[in-house]
Amino acid sequence: MRGYIVVEAEDEITVRTFITKERNIRGILPKPLSEAEVDKLLEVKSYVQEIHNGDTVEFTSGPFKGYKARVLRVDDVKSDMTVELMDVVVPIPITTKMNTARIIQKAQK
Image (cartoon, rainbow, N blue to C red):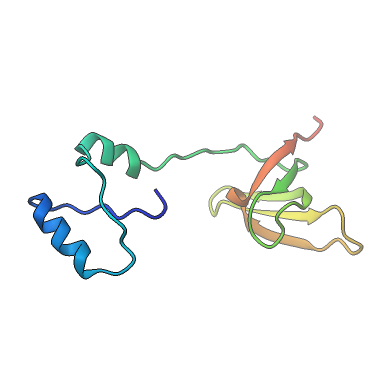
């Protein structure tokens, strides 16, 4: 829903009055959203990955986006992991959040 503002108002006239006073608002949706549609848009989707020591991950966001790393340590309480980047000259342990990476290869058991 990037670029949209959800407004709760008594009627359409109140919303139109509001948007005429604000800059950079280009218009309103042709019909009001139902409460079920708003709940669906605001629902937080949680995708939990099971990352373990020795897994190979690839960063999907942040300053290391696109880099591959080997997981050294996982802290489930803080949702942090300590990794070692693979394609660097000097491997330095980096602690980062687990949601910034995705698993590309599980560790060999």
